[in-house]
Image (cartoon, rainbow, N blue to C red; front, side, top):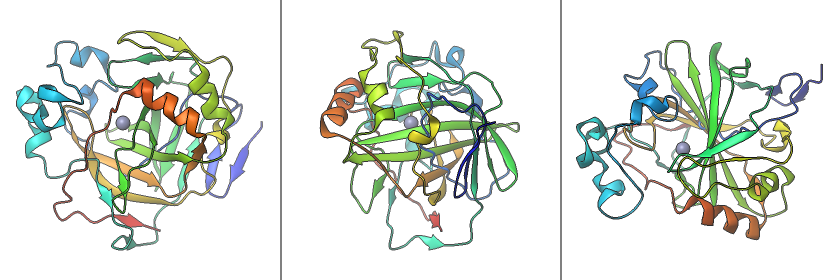
Length: 278
Ligand SMILES: [Zn+2]
């Protein structure tokens, strides 16, 4: 067993590989209720959105109009707990929050262009996140460029969302920001892969990625209760936005931006929600 442990991050054995980025934005405020309809989201169930209304990131089907495109998307307009949000680091409520325990193993060599992002789906191999004693199975990770969440009003070049689901249906997402800096071997593998250009196209990484290379070593996070950032914008999602950022080179980030085509939703109103941190 090759256990990698760094502070509070625990990566399970045989971890070698992963094609899941971990950006978890665990938004979480200890909530126990399963988000209504979350399991219908296309992130988790492709069948569910096969006949759903088309949406995009620009023009008449862009974020400003999502709520009008389909009755199923109404929350995009009427919801009071929507994501992403701006995180004002000066007003974050500092608390003694539970540690994030990541137990990831196995690999998902293929990824797909689902029409909105590049997504790596995870096979059910026991990979999971545990927080406050609650277990969330790792489902997939995908990318947004530029970032969706902002920090003190600032966008970052790339944001990774790692999506997990608990047995009761609750969704927990870890969000990881990537900023320009030194080269990242793991992110380079993703960027060097044949990123699928068209909806439905698939691609593969040339070699497995070590999970620990995709995660910041610092486990600290901001957390709040929000929603999926894509239609139907289902609420009840626990977000964990990691404070520490990954780095990647400028050319790599530009390549990812070209592939992802500005797939970010603007920040949404807090509506009284409190962002917690530690
Ligand atoms: Zn996302």
